[in-house]
Image (cartoon, rainbow, N blue to C red; front, side):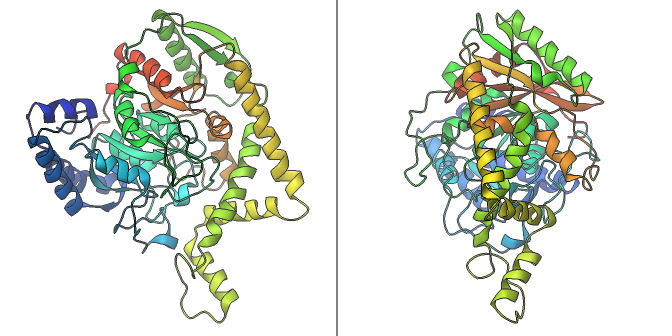
Length: 483
């Protein structure tokens, strides 16, 4: 049963081939057996899962149906879950049990999903390798000596290792798409505002977006259907109708205009990945797509702009974790200043401290105009580049990452090298666009992803292209040895 996709699980449950309770027990046993190798979970929720599975089976027995009714999933550990630890991968929130469910958690629970647990992540979603977690690094099931990508590496590793069919994730600068590429999954970052951020512990509020991680585009469509929608509790949520994403999967790609930016193929891109990207372009051409070279001239400025804006917002968002209102509290403080200093120093890891300091500096008097304001102007130029490109093409295609997954610890002493791995993904967050990564081959036995970007609220178009590609290729069906 563990090899089934969400779509196959839905059919199996509808046909009464197995119950949600049977499936849940099978997957919980598999997690107990295999996750010690991966460290992909922070918390398991066996009692909740079994009660939700029994409830889902009862709903089906009463005539209810639904693609997610009885489907097992897990949540990245920054989605608040009532009465369950929500740690954000940090010592700061190690003992925090959320008093309410995030909107995404509540919507998926109402649809009948079964929550198996909370997945490991880079601390406060800051990282590209899932090595900054207080609970230890997550390992890539394709090679346990390599990273799974971050910050949603726990969700990615668990799905890739067939511990569960799909999981929620979040993407601030590529944290859904990059782990998807590194672990041979399909991952979708929706349009900013398409999925509610209420109850999703913030890193950078203008960039964060929740989305699905699964093995196929079809499964991403099913999970996104349950996640998306307007939320009055979230002031950045967009009041836009949610289409039937599954219904658009089988559209023809005949005449689809695909733009390939020339800036994507410069120095820094592994030539073997470039070859796989060009192969995927040829595959889509055979399906009727029309390929056009385009330009995104301000892409070169995206990384410095992002690494000013994101830390600036993080320094503001994380100020609430002070040992008084929220978070870890040091023992026997001498005074209030000592309480703040030691609580934050003990509670936050090195990468989080680094970004808080960078952000506070960029927002400080005398430097705001020189750094933060200038970065926001670059952000607008990046968005303008995309708007111009989408006047000429329907989607944009390129590599998800410049390199395959690196070895654990290989970039720990050089954070800038790790930041540069986000070069192809962060532009979508700066512009608020939807982006998807899909499996496209292997380099040295490690998975490689191809990224698709589309205009606002065109998630259905991305899923359609990825689904048609997956009907004609088998990269997404490959399974890591031993799992």
